[in-house]
Image (cartoon, rainbow, N blue to C red; front, top):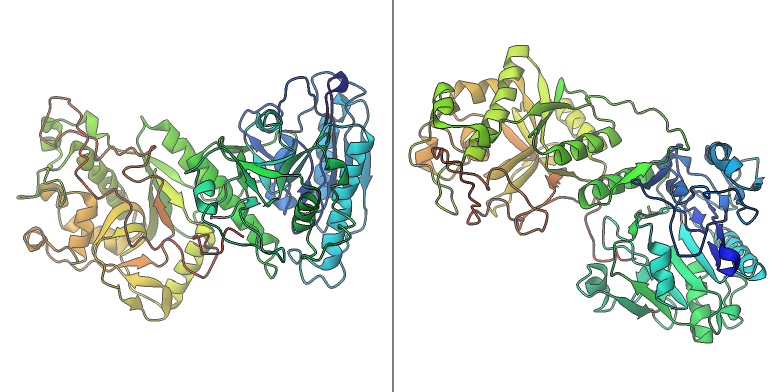
Length: 616
């Protein structure tokens, strides 16, 4: 984005270059990849700065699937003007990036005075390229030349600022440009969030130009310290003030005459800044947006698509969410039940935000779910529960707080119980059950489908498979022979995501649990004989539920007790036999605390569990 305050004009130049990592220069964010999805922040106008209007251009290389995020920031100007001329170029495509850009331009082109359109027609790869995610020296050089072309154009046009933004960076804050300019810094980056420790800055660099870990990185990344901090390098999205002393000597290509560091555009630019004394900063005071975790060189476009879908799901949980642009058509979603007879989503009607988030998450993963209105504990009273045959298990107390059963826990149990009844009544062979506070692990769908295929291939007899839970006991659980991603379940809390068979549902109903009720996540371990309380277990027989758990887990709660956004309708509820209407927050229970053994990801699959070097 080349910003020029003269006559309130702005140039914003997007360059989407390279299948592996498209580069978009501008106050617009573009996701490129396999498909024609254009993504933008929910209901956001273009990135804004006082007295500045956008004038845009692009260069693009394909990955059309992931969605091109930034046409939200590429909204056309309010009035056609000769100062608004998009410049669009695209190259090295093997997908539908060109068609995607053409569709967008056809939708908004009339709002501009003219459009400069420079596509490269034939698909081609770089010499010695092993795949779309492999960065060769020729590819780095091509990218540096593109960035240099943008930088030169900005200077020749008399711009005051240029904003570089990669297309896998999604800015959800439409004030980003104003906030960065107001800092008055020569080179400044908005800190972007990701699914791991990765972000768009380094806090340390070695004399040879390689990454150096420092004590400042994690406090900055986690926003334990807030503000704008001088760093040796920023990348992916950053603003350059072209009027700053020394800025005229900054360059991407050719590198500085004394340059001996790695041949990489972001390090070349960091060296150029260091050589002329131009300082670099990163700012984390505000939430600016997200960046997709890059895949490894041996991976392909489908792997990047998996990462990007996970980023969308994480944004739905942590906010702000991302929505697709209206200017580009998306390939149709084809939701399915993934081989299950039914996919149930238990959701309270008075929690529409949770329901909407859950359904949006399933839609993005192309999973067809059916909402089951949860039984609301706040609507229960003693006479209604008696008519349902509900009675408390003698002697039951919460294992941490010592309290009795809550009405929220009764409602939760009845919600799951109604599904078990439907399974038996309809003779459903296997089902998938979600509560509405699920945070999905990366590639949830693919990993679950593979797990069920492996279970079927091994002909494993099973009744229940946890997909998300809190393992209570520290003992290592026994692995299932021939199934490396499955363990025999021990004492566990939570029922946020599980698979249930018809035989399992019959066993649960046959135990007649409504007449001796305790929380559903205490009941299930009793039924597979792993509950530590012998007095509780004595009320149920047989306890032969065949229960297993995915390892690593495929789902977790969206929030835990102590988190700012945590809310529990089972823990915040009145006692089961209290009809006074008072609501009590039972802070003494530890069930909803983050578990010390939460194994949410392993070394295989598309896990995005943080590893020590993820900040790279």
